[in-house]
Length: 125
Image (cartoon, rainbow, N blue to C red; front, side, top):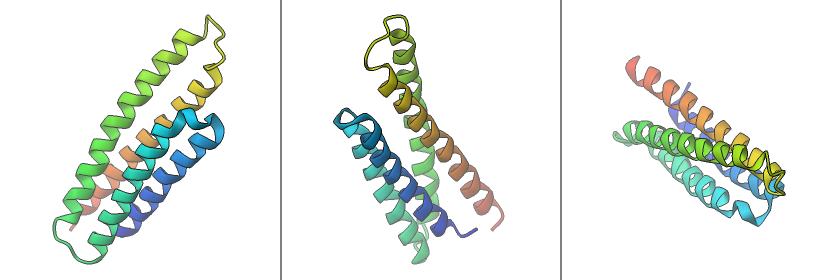
């Protein structure tokens, strides 16, 4: 698999996750739109640099997906903790927090997959 195509997909996926979060949760999810959108644009830019033979783009792609794995894992954990706090209270934000957890956790899992594919690809070259 070509790393640039992977990063284009990853960037588009992150942007889409931000949009989906706002669609399901509303403007409370504007941080998801900002983080997914900005990280997505960076991933697409790194993919473009890689496609144009930038020597350091492969390493930047690995560092980006590793950093996003850490950020999204941390955010998913904090969101799940908030979900557990809201369950006994039957709080009105419970559904939104549950959806946020699922989207953020999915972003973390995708970051792990992208990281692993990049590392394997780099090791085989």
